[in-house]
Length: 270
Image (cartoon, rainbow, N blue to C red):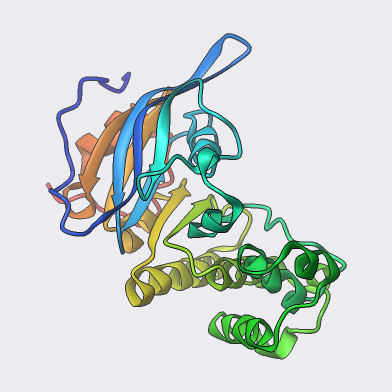
């Protein structure tokens, strides 16, 4: 079954300020279109899961939202400004958590978390590593928040995968962002560690009112942690619903014959 591009599902009306607005986003590489006319809004304090099979365009979408690549058409707006047009200091509003952690292995956990403060300090301080006492104390608090205070001086490349991802989340917290974009943050982790990482992201969302957009392959995790699900298939948004309304029809719009997604222990109500 091919997902129906003319879906009529829509999320509930927003009840909080819009943090991020995606409008008519398209991206092509070498004449091949990866994402097509993608539009949605993300509200303050909202946890949104992005689901889709491999090749659906999730990573390309996230790279466009983070302004790591420029869209071919359309725009991404954060607080009424396109990320590619804002100054470095305002980029701290957007934190990114990657599947492969993107830490500097030879630096300590603390040194990696301090990278989240670069948007707040003069360039020379960042280049020389001369952060203020307040910045260091805040970075240590962020490590404590993710349960790694005791490992603050350990080199990042000596930590386990789950610990490295928690360092990456601490770095994101250190930015004091308005939105966290997490591109498959649990894909390389075991299930228990993956859940602990999602617990941290959910906690940031609830306690700091930070919006979280998280791409996942596991439908049961999306339903357990998200407020809302956006589904991609063949580069199109094919479903956008509150998590309570995500059902077999929504699933089939994304995965077609219900064989492409990881359902885990999900049982859909009839």
